Length: 265
Ligand code: FAD
Image (cartoon, rainbow, N blue to C red; front, side):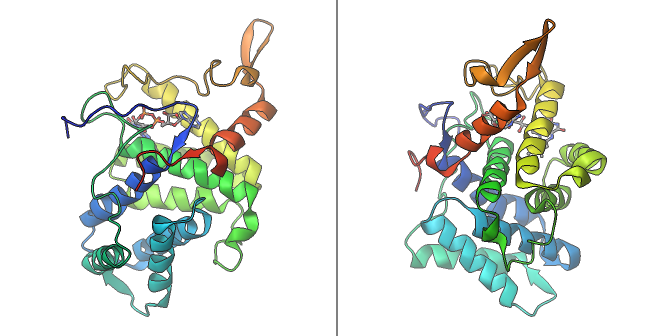
């Protein structure tokens, strides 16, 4: 709400509270717009849950919940699942394990300076950056999941999730265009990490100065020279990225050891 206290945070870290809030919002708000999950939609949701269950980088109750949800979805012979059944399972598991997946939404690195800014879309980007880095670091985690055969499984699942469920339809159209243009060229975990980074910067550039731009966290090419000096170079007076250093930076920034549990469950 508007009266929430400001939470101090460090822009060089990634907060598990943002990842948990992303999943909370996704499961309880975004999905709620779909009364029944069936057919292609159900498949997209199953793949998303499987991906997170396999690649979520920290153990604990959230990882456990996603695994339980994934096992349950895969064991169901049903062609359609009422959204309420998903919600019941989430609520039940939460009661049993004594946790409440973000009984409130707790944005930290994704805090907006006022209501309506940042929050969920920021946390969804963050979640998928984390998943690309995790997949690059440990590709075998997807073995046996049914997703291991795809060339760029994290990006493909993200693409299908965004197209099918993301509440911002205009965002979905933009992302789909970008995916159609170049996602098929991505064939390694490294490329996945860099493709998502490039795409995110394109969106930042497009949105800089727009209504969704938070003055406290202005949209700009990322990482800034302050965050990663070695990522930036000049060639004949023109700014260029040092891709090798960007990749190293992304691996570190979104890697498991840079996750900060502060404000988390
Ligand atoms: P965000 O852009 O959400 O970034 C979150 C955090 O990620 C930043 O604070 C930073 O720490 C880090 N970050 C920033 N850039 C990069 C990068 N290049 N690589 C890795 N990490 C980075 N909004 C629209 O109005 N139109 C659109 O077409 C649109 N498309 C979207 C498509 C997708 C797939 C998603 C998830 C969101 C989209 N949005 C779109 C929302 C928009 O991109 C922002 O998420 C939202 O405006 C909140 O912005 P933010 O300032 O919190 O930063």
